[in-house]
Image (cartoon, rainbow, N blue to C red; front, side, top):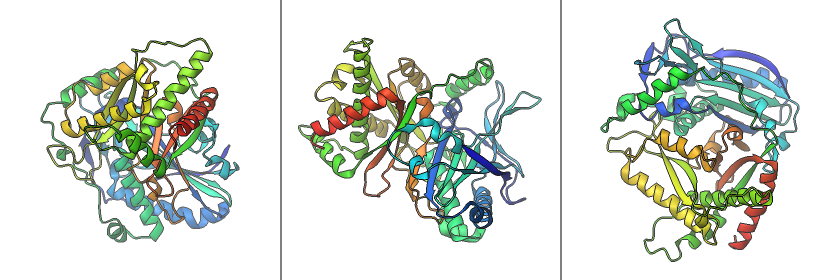
Length: 463
């Protein structure tokens, strides 16, 4: 589906970044066990491939090199020593990012459409990370990021990224992307880049304190993970077969109407956000579509007391006893898990009850900051094994549609890895009017059923 035109490595300018090692905090370590993030940015680009190669590509490479000077952890490697060693990020002069350029003959408008399309459609635009290596002393070396630019001649461009979440969360990655985009847009020198962005990343792990002694618990999980890596060599199952992906928009008007429904009769008058009601609406629609399909196949488990689970991440940068600046490059996310009984979710007030449950989880995260009742890694695994956990990926607060390389804002941003992990992706609406876009990848039969339930719920609630 794509023709590779060129491949190369991009490093920070030589000699400007010293050799450095950065420890991983207890916010970073859980992401070692998670799949890589695959984010695709699509832009209108009405020029031929030759124009891109001769005019656009040189500045993309230069601005990326200057950006990596300040965001060098993305050019580094994650070092994973065996027990009792601790994992860390290591950069040395010459470390680089794998960058490929490709061309596609696919219909660009079809690729960026919101309606259901085969999930395989996006995979050729996703770059592959270089393979990990193992040093003589048993340290596993994990590359951090790979980039691919795919040109759709006279139609568009896709900037695809695959990166290891361990180095930084969505806020850190989007800081990196916007910095790169601003430099490319202006044709800037390094000094101009700093003035344009006026907020360089803070690369200092010492700002994250550990008053509760959480690091040891995560190190135990890490030592188990690193010792068992490579033991299971069975090829992964193709879980994308017969799947389609689609984007659903929950605009501001719908969100405001649903907020009114949720707050009616709420004695506590809790704050109800667009995020809460959108998650609740989509989550309940997903559950009802699964239940309907199971019922039609005579394969349903009608235990009203079983739980469904919803998971999202809460940014802790402004919710900790110790200050963590917004420009901190690293992870500062707390997982939030919502447990609600089946009987409540599929009932008449399922969406309202789901929204309030999500609201309580947000309130608890704001109250407790870095404290949680149980190890989040174990808590997530315990719920995931039931098959009834719906995780989220991305956030409407990341500003992915503000990433302008000089060709205008993206016409579509996708998270391709949801094809594999069953998450719903979330981003702000492209129109900038305060709504939310939700991406889903489902079996084709379930997608058909979900669309029917989604539209039925909109009609039932007068949205």
